Length: 349
Image (tube, rainbow, N blue to C red; front, side, top):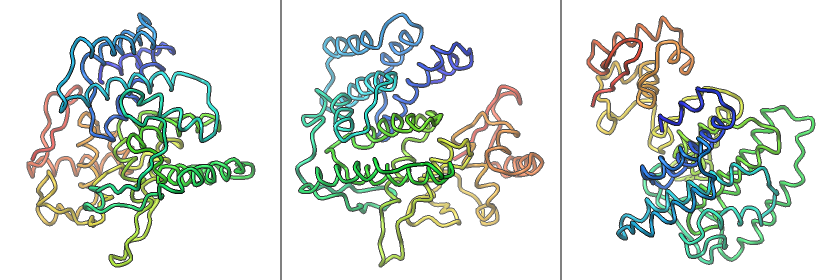
């Protein structure tokens, strides 16, 4: 989505806002491992330019898949395209009502004609094997009590007032509410994408300026953080942990620069990197160096980062960043591709 960034840099408010919305809509597909087609990206650009309306985008996508039907094992690309367009439409609207009906309506609008039970509460119990839990599942709400649980959570949240609370306290409360809403898992499929859209709309009612890039770049982290917020296993001495979700919310709403690294949320993760499973295989001294690990983690996600950006995001001084970068280069772990000004870093396998 690099081309979308140009609209943001150019500074035309209408185009910039549309570009941000589209980046969020497309990025959210990552929570289910989906990737929209090039046709969707091109069509989205026409919408950003003002050549076509969002309704015309949806119509073009529908017509495209009528003319170019996919095989059964390819049809999730169609889902990614259609849901991206629908997310862009919903995020572009100002209307919002805090209610279970609104939550169900968002799901129906996103997945109508994609999932058979779009907008309907699931009728059976579910489990989901999670990578972050090494194949285990968290406990989701029982199907028999879903409607009552949903109504109860909304009624309790309606009583919430941020009066007298600090911004941090308000954010901690909202993070807890949204994690509970997600954990109910009202829907058979599409639960995380629906919850994310509802969250963005809800946060706007508090006057928060939401950094939508977080959902574009870190939607998978968002989902994994929700999982860890609800997993406990006393036999393994693991309790629920909302630290990761608060890192995400800190970046989302407070402008914090917490490193969001999925690997750290795995229940077997320790501060010592497992060199057999990590893409970067390092010697013992380097593995134990937290500074270098944080630099590498950031460069993997942001290969064009410069020294100042690395210092800002990791919290280390520019001089320390430069020193560790030089050591990483000598060790052959990273390589500079291109010039210092326009090039990028390559983290070697």
